[in-house]
Length: 296
Image (cartoon, rainbow, N blue to C red; front, side):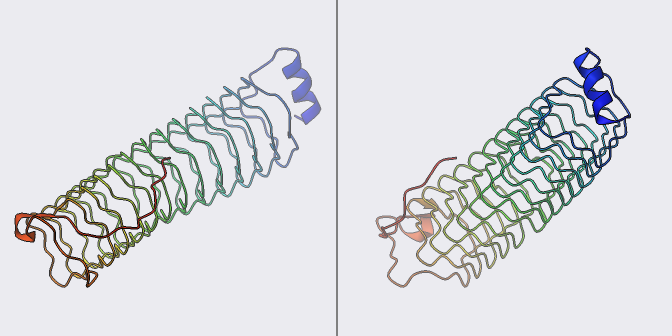
């Protein structure tokens, strides 16, 4: 089928084009809302600014396709293959991507707010500045993905694979990451206030200049973690392992350190405990000058 035939049949009211082969075709800027392209072969197809709102693209093959600024809101993209596709600026709000493969895809500036992404493969994907607020990422593979500046507040990351993920300056406020493995991960400058990191592995992680206010880090492993200038005001670090961690110039106002392992921890020399002794687990440090926290 060629492009002209598809457009003519769509204009006549036909919607079911399942299994169609349109490799390397140019479908840019067309309005194909509600179209059914289940199992379609669309490798290296140009879909720039194409409107596919509410479309069914289950199992479609988009290898290397150009979907920059495409409109895919509420589309069903379950099991679709977007390997090495370019989705820069694409609109995927409330889209369904269960089991989709986005390995190596370019997803810079994509809006995936409230999208369904359970078990999605985003291994090594470029996700800088992506909007994933409220998205379902249960058991998603985010290993080695670049989420610099990403908005993840309210997302569900239960069981997600986060090995080697890049989360610098990301917004991760108020989500549940208990028991997650973030060993060696770069979270510098990230907004992590109110997050549940109970028993999480943050060994050797870079948390410098991050905001961890009111975060729960009970029994978390922060061995040799870099918390330089981190804001930990009212965070719960009870029974956490902070051995050899760098807490220089960190804001530890009202932090709970009950039973924490502080062996070899590095503190700013001028820091001093005010009012309550460290042995009781609560410390208030006289240190000012931290920047205002932004919200996602």
